[in-house]
Length: 176
Image (cartoon, rainbow, N blue to C red; front, side):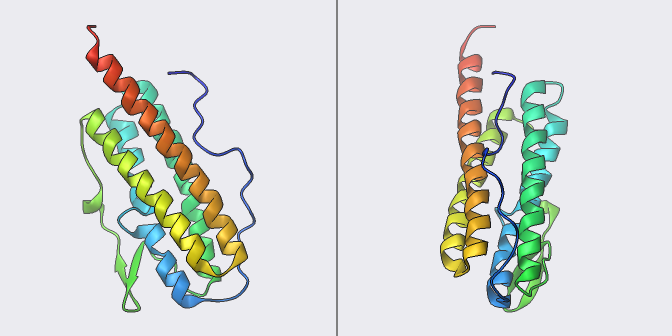
């Protein structure tokens, strides 16, 4: 793998703003914070993986750390959007108007690199689809711009993880 690994799209992030309050959509958007494919869980997994694989796969460990930083930026932007929309940006999601809080039990604690990479790939693909869908549902051009820009990063993450999976498969398939 090369040394210049791209972990985010090169386009600038739009300003985090909203056209007006929309508490219901803000609560729906909380799933992107603490839902099953939310930013908080994704950050937790990437930080865990950066530690677990530091000795056995140092380059991939660094990539996991870089991905976590991008996801932290997403978490901040989504949390700001939720707040500006008039909802509480909880680490969880809303069900019937009440928060359901995130739990560390949802983190994938795999210590096998291929399993971790495949899990991460699936998560990034779900996140991309979720952001595209949420952007379309938002009804707010500013929210649409932020969510669409975040989706670009998730697409980069998907491509990067596919490349890492292919690279690890090729290495593992060769005699060493």
